[in-house]
Amino acid sequence: MNVLVINAGSSSLKYQLINMADEKVLAKGNCERIGIDGVITHKIPDGKTISYEKSFPTHTEAFQELVKLLSEGEDKVISDAGEISAIGQRVVHGGEYFYKSVVIDDDVLQKIEDLADLAPLHNPAAVLAIKAARQVFGDVPQVAVFDTAFHHTMPEKAYIFGIPYEYYQKYHVRRYGFHGTSHRYVSNRLYQISDNISRVGSKIITCHLGNGSSLAAIKDGISIDTSMGFTPLDGFIMGTRAGSIDASIVLYLAEKEGLNPKQMSDLLNKKSGLLGISGVSSDNRDVTRAADSGDPRAQLTQEILSYQIKKFVGSYAAAMGGLDALVFTGGIGENDHHVRKRVCADMEFLGIKIGERHNRAAQGGVEMNISASNTKVETWVIPTNEELLIARDTRDLVGK
Image (tube, rainbow, N blue to C red):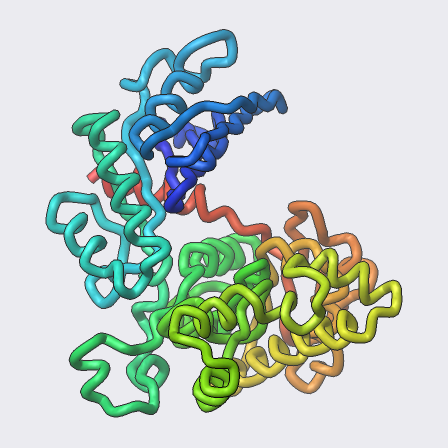
């Protein structure tokens, strides 16, 4: 069974074709600049990369082009589109409708569209991709896998904000959380590879650290709290996002700078975080290089990032009444040993202590226990694989 996994943006279409017999990636790529001028980058397992410009007026033409790449020429990996058994679509926001992955029908599609107000940059793009896939693949079943679904298990005390309750009732203003597919994948992987931790009875914290970042408190295999909130802006500082701030700052700056809501949103989402504090870059690698060269604001940025993550770790351990494991994933979590070292420093009182050699060795896709010997809490680096989890959910649902 071959599953085509799709992660669509408003002007992009990332894809992976996965053979579920051995969970091997047959090909992957990205159609970019859809609706502008268009370019596609396509990779196959032997390491070959194909890239060329191609006009994609809509997502439909992008799907048509990737089918050609998959099924035609000397680098084809399937004979025809009929070998694609199902399509798994990443959808960012499931609202309160969806607490698990679902097969997409007209009602599901309408609900995803109805949730556009909660994820205006993401859900409309998913709708476009689902409709385009229907045009190209006809009745091939599609499955929606939601970023928010994993956090649907949070109790009310974790997701209700301290504003009049009527706004939750009228407008569904609450904590939703994101990166759920990643948090679910790495927590499930931990249960498989750890000799001491199983789902039932476990208390773990997963740290998805990248350009966008979030932590999740996972007890008995289910999410009980997470750092992102109503939108992905909440939590701690990220590449360009401010994270949690005093709400009065928004009003104060809007008045002082004469900013309208759109401009204020751009400031908080696109000009803050690592970029805003360091003045160097939104990429943590650039900030690290600047810090190593003595840039004081870059050094401060690194300190703030690690300090804020550390506070979430401590608060989640308190919320769960203990901690069995801490897991790092995402581009920063998997590769930056400096961030991991700073987050775990002086955390022996919680049972967290990492080994310097193991911590430095854990990068580039390595799956590793980086704990020091004889520590109470296991600390792991586990590379995430959201595409594989989407493919598995799709296989399981379509198989039924």
